[in-house]
Length: 417
Image 1 (cartoon, helix red, strand yellow):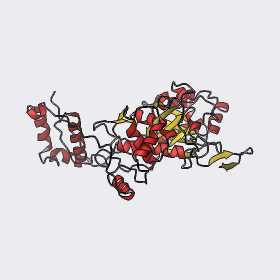
Image 2 (cartoon, one colour):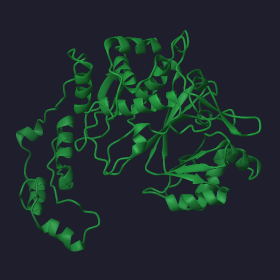
Image 3 (cartoon, helix red, strand yellow):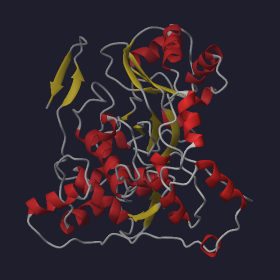
């Protein structure tokens, strides 16, 4: 079928690489960029002018693409595969290796733990799986070849993030999801991951006071590992595969926490998504905007939703303190969060909204009845259990733990060492 795809010149290299990666080189035409927030006269000038990439009048190029027979090269496009990176680097000094990782874009810009053979071998004790077993495929953009990776390659990124073997099953589950934490778009996506089930306490994850703050070791390194996997396994290359206009600092840790099942008055989040309560899972969310420090009943939630309503106006995830969940159930009568989701969607009156697109996760230490609203979509939950060793979580003789926040009997806060 004759086709003349058109995309703006800013993305010419992007879509041409796409053609090479998929073995289908289309006859693109490229009008100037940008096309948003410019005058009608400017847009007319684009149509009447030349393609800035080829120099050919734009409309002549479109007509030619629709009418000229295919060339032999177009009929027999070749699929271009990128070579795999080598498994090992040449030995060097610690300083030079840190520089090598940084200058090659293999880090998040922060210091890493160098993934030596010994450290990677230690990380691999966190699972029974074969180091060369296939885990998943990932790409930060749909326009590039999805790269395959093994248990060992995930272990490399886990070491770089500062994780220990006890964290490895969660990180492998993230890898098995195949979803990058920072997908490419001209907008700037943020992500969130929430862990449910017994593994939360096994590895000391925080789901209470300060759960989304940098005060917990497990939350920090697991969230960071997802970013490093996205960079190295999903192939983040700024301007080439990663095009976020401003980016977001959320990508450093990806709002990594566990759900406070113990203080929640509702079924745990993963149980609401079809998993067993005693199963450990990681649930993934993605969106653009996070608004904090909100208080008030469901009517206030509705008002903020209307103000936040993003490009599609349908997806929202509320991160709510247990005090909020208790109030929603006991004071406002919502025994099931799905009932609340249905009410909010009905009142939103948007053609995009569906109840299953409005989700509630209970996180916090009952210090204040506050809730955070995001325009995040829930994507999937992945089981962690298949990656856990049969003998149980592989812990250090003295597991690494940061001080834990505790609530005293009178409700005041203290720190436990």
